[in-house]
Length: 389
Image 1 (spheres, one colour):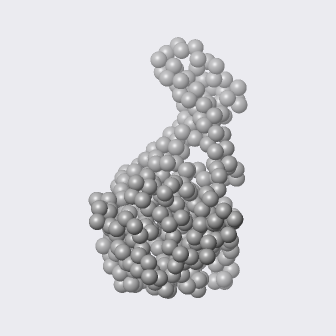
Image 2 (cartoon, rainbow, N blue to C red):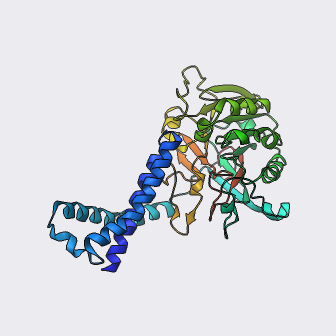
Image 3 (cartoon, rainbow, N blue to C red):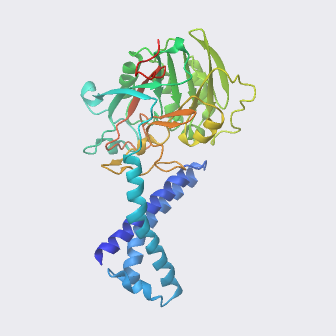
């Protein structure tokens, strides 16, 4: 009977994770999200104690229905068993065997140990800097990724266009500024055509000052765009916007801009909902040109599909930060749970790219390194498997 007790606790954990992810995907004030975080943690720990107190290790006594409370607890145990034996395995199988999007081409990456490069751990002055020094923590490593995306409406003149996608720096003192400088120097060396920064730049007024010296090391050939995220909304969003503009970046907000790239029109859209309102008004935006959208959260994917977005770049969920072999991510702040945790997703007509981000309020990364991504945009394959000329 110990097996069924453990299964009930596992199912309860699965349900609490799903609830936690959903609540964290809502546009709530930070103090409220912290309360929900602590509440879910308390419920996870309390359930085994309540279950043991009510029935001990043998749960068969719960199903005698001697009291109304016992019937409710027994019903919840059954729900937990369904979560443990059905929902979790099914969800994991669907994720493992999810087909690779046809638009997703080649991928290569290089992991750089910034600690070794700097000659010591740049844990910095953040209040949680000790977490960065924990064994097996990958928070101070960086994976520089190059992904090729084949997009149906990409103009022929843009074949090979490059976009540097950065997200979730979470400047908070850990890692320190030297770590970010090393990362930005490496990013600048790839000489992208476009730079896209998708929010959550600084956690606190003191670290907003880091934005210019850190991101100021970037270089681009055509233009750079930026939006804000929920952490930026919690602190001083206008200060963040001013510093980004000082760097020459186009700060989109919930708006759009039309620019010319290699003689072709590009409509770039900022989507900062649900933390900044109102949502972008695209009624006057031209429909014909390719549409690139920067959205902090991937939860805006349904809006992007309705808006005819060709490529949406997002972050926010950090890939879960802690990933478990086989099961993958667990805690993902999204209304869709783990569905869009990181990588490339085809949601026609939109292709969604979700970055794992570079930082985090908690500098903890296990099987989920920080990521800086260079996207190479290509025309689609023809039927013979070759790119059109």
